[in-house]
Image (tube, rainbow, N blue to C red; front, side, top):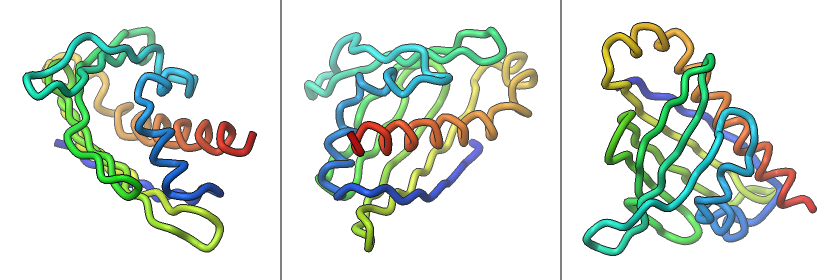
Length: 143
């Protein structure tokens, strides 16, 4: 699995940032590469399962994921359960101006041909999605 890690600062409290990140379906509002996020069911523990769709170089990619850990206001973790293999987290800590966000994600495209075609794009793409998400958070929380 390939891993990326990015750190950001946002001018909002960890509680405020956590609540926005925890609103998973609003992720598609972030624009850019994320085309849609919607609830498609729940697992045996009652945790919602979300279907993500992104479009990369005209190729739609989808995966289903669920939240695996919620510790308000400091940590949200998720992992995919179908499609592209993903595992990630947002870790929030207070900063002088609001919150520091540590975004971590590991991923693997389980389709060999698609992986070969997309691998040169995936790390920069994952970083771009993370940056877009944080920029959207900043814009939303400054309103």
